[in-house]
Length: 312
Image 1 (cartoon, rainbow, N blue to C red):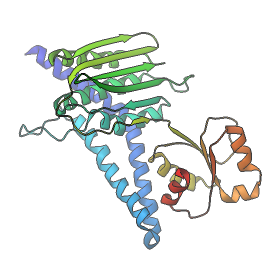
Image 2: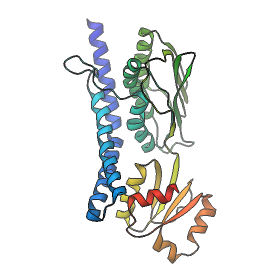
Image 3: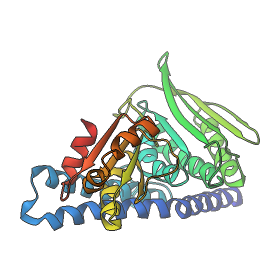
Image 4: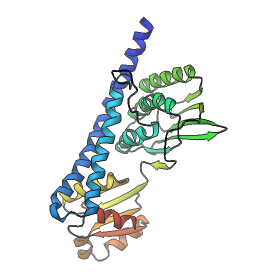
């Protein structure tokens, strides 16, 4: 009985630590979604189908972000009547909750998604969430080179294997506690388990997961800093609103009123009036940063049109 109480207490401590670390970036993400809704609301009757779709997507994102957060805050993921609550998948939880934290901490974070069996998915999702958040929580800002984390899976001979690797990060007490809980679950479920840790590298592998009765999952890779964008605009309010839309559509945005001294970017979005006032600006930016494209932002361009221009 005392052992069970200690395990429950340890699990509660892990969840509390995870939630403390997750809340700032999650609140920032929710605020970005609210900014999208505000932008579309301000358009009023001028909002077209594309803008209304953005607003609808923002509402869905608000729900999808809050749902796994609330689920993780509960003790077991089970509803009071004993029925299993709708649990988000391991990789979906990582995308919705861990990627925003990685962006905030400037950690390169990659997911290589595979389908997982429903039962294993539900049990492993929370523990991998605790582990990854604790691992990121020990990261020092402005570290150079930037730390890298990859959580990926593969399917071979009817079995799923999950591998987490981190470079430039140290597994501290919180991560080690989560790792211990993951090891106990893996052994209890008969999964293969291996882990390694050093001062600046960390790895864990959970294998032998039957690849039957899988949950749907996209097999795409998602990188936290996949599309780096420089946004030049004199108006701070416009920069904030547009950057919110871009960040919620997988762009990593550096927003500024002045041309930066350095940086690594793939695209640039430049205020059209600025570009007209400085005829050589766009060409200079493209040459300096080896940009794939520079897009000029005209006044009152809708969010949907901005995304369309950048994705063209």
